[in-house]
Length: 133
Image 1: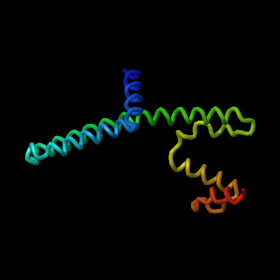
Image 2: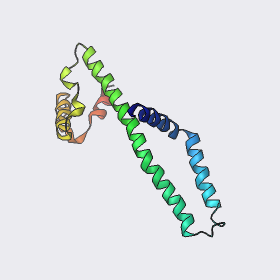
Image 3: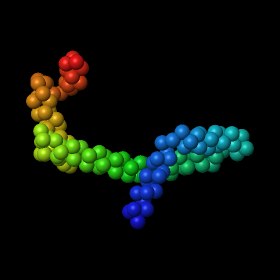
Image 4: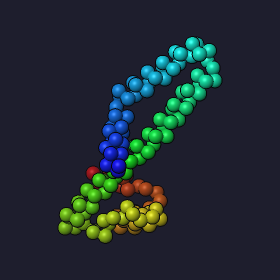
């Protein structure tokens, strides 16, 4: 069951990000709008689009989240392999994505101080990098 869901989620997430998916959704909303006079702009007519978009949004959240989780896990595995493969890489960073937010912030701030940044909360690392060039 898990494999079927993953393949389905990947296919839907891939399709949902394409212009054809936007065009399809736009045509549905446009058609719904054009049908307003036929249904006398009734509450039921409005309920159809509200219910439909709510259901689609609710289901898409899970499908897209599944795809993002897989992508994030793949990126983490690749980064971990790069750290492991480098002679100067610090293996203690492998797997830190499993730490809590406070621990990650502490690690980030420590690394930024090691790079010469006095006040980590100001986030000027990119500016310093650009000035080096």
